[in-house]
Image 1 (cartoon, rainbow, N blue to C red):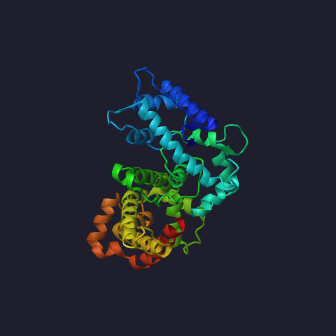
Image 2: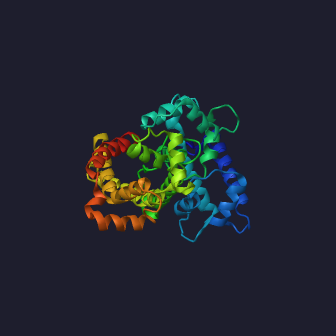
Image 3: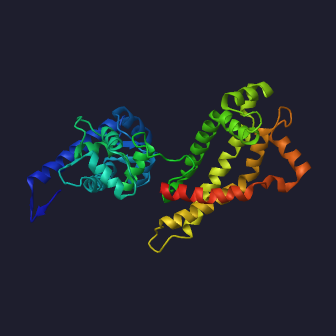
Length: 365
């Protein structure tokens, strides 16, 4: 740190400041590919990629929003230097918050301990993977230089942002459920980043459910017809193929896939809205309030898409040719049984969803 007494500057601090300026100059020259004294977003993207510097989501745009003070769409050297200096100060604070024993190095045990304080439990092995992503010299620990170089162009401004970056990269897997959102930041809400999570969750859910659809249909068939002939897994699959061909294994999957997007979107939206009802004056929310919010969100989502659950089940247990598709199935149910048929089994289903969704979201967060 630069310290001044009267007109004297400590040599060590002055040397460090000069070294930083030289490093900034060299880096700026490498990024300024057309040598016009300014770096635009395209130059930043290609330059950082060539240098192998890791970036967070939409990092370049965030850097320009923070550093481009005159809003001309380019960073001159002064803006570039100011951004890096300010960012390094924030990264230094984050580094020190993880360096619990103040030895100038971050080790796996310190990451485990720090994340536990934030309510995230990870193993030493997971912490080791985080270290490996930053460890340039193979010591299985990270010093300030390695930390600074790794996060130099990652706009995460505090330890929570860094943990969020780890969580969304491949280095940290804490077992997220695809149907459970992170709490959207104000920036994500303003810039529309939330829809990417919804889309990703919907696509992943569609792929996973399509892959396991035959087993899902077999489960329903065994629940309904299991007592007839003592149906087992192999026999059940053979019976479905014999009755309707290979395609029948995926009967009802179309409805299952279609309902994922609205179910996920409604659950996300409702959870965020219900949480606001319980936020205290400090802007915080407790575990019990999260449980209640999650329960209400789960109930809201299930109530909205429950008719699709009925359609999925009817298609799954239906015989070949009984329904030509989900619209035909809905039309026949409405004609023969009325609107109430779309909510058969709703009460026991919702009684199960309320504690499930509440526990799911409360324990996750």
